Image (cartoon, rainbow, N blue to C red; front, side):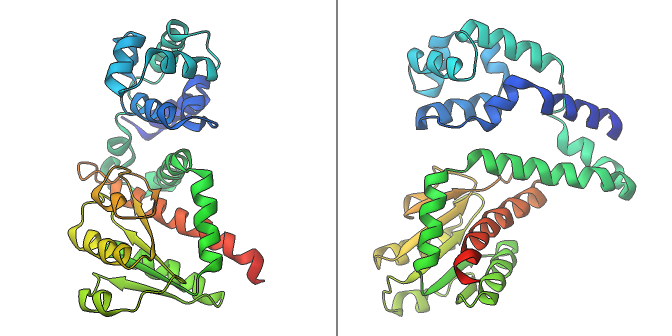
Length: 277
């Protein structure tokens, strides 16, 4: 697929009213958000399922499905099916072939246009997954903290360093930890003013999970930054900030994940500036 063709399909996607509502719907319950995520990950499921069948697949109820459809501006589930099908026909492969199209031939000139689209996709998806009350709560924890620790391995360590550098410029003590030192964690004195972030895209990095366990056992506030809200890491943290889900099968997924994590920390950094300057 040529990049111009992909860009045209992507723009069509951006103009799709119902798909836009799905991506940026607000004031949804936890169940409704789960249904939206399920549909966005596999839109075709709507075309082949009744409201009852979709409810079974999402472990919700038919009434919840219908209520969501009405919140999205349709008359009910059949109307939702029809409108989604009409919109989806206009973007036959844009959602499924983004990585292949953007990475076309390693063309540096094509990257002039493609990289901003790649970034925007990661930012849009991260924004859609944000839980405003959780973000506000964590932002307040940052303001109240005496020190911020960020744990991450491999590329996540470098993301942690960037976040810490920005906070340190504001006079907020922040330290990045590469592959947590368990001796340090086990012997450190519990401190309610220390706020810890643990980064793992899958949420199943064993060293990050162990770090979260130790910190949690010391009654310290711990936040997971991960692409999986139901991960083992999330279960050992006070809150979770969802980042763009890393997929090893997509070559450019790592870049998108990095953009997503930086976006999350930059939002918290921006929330720290107003009271500092």
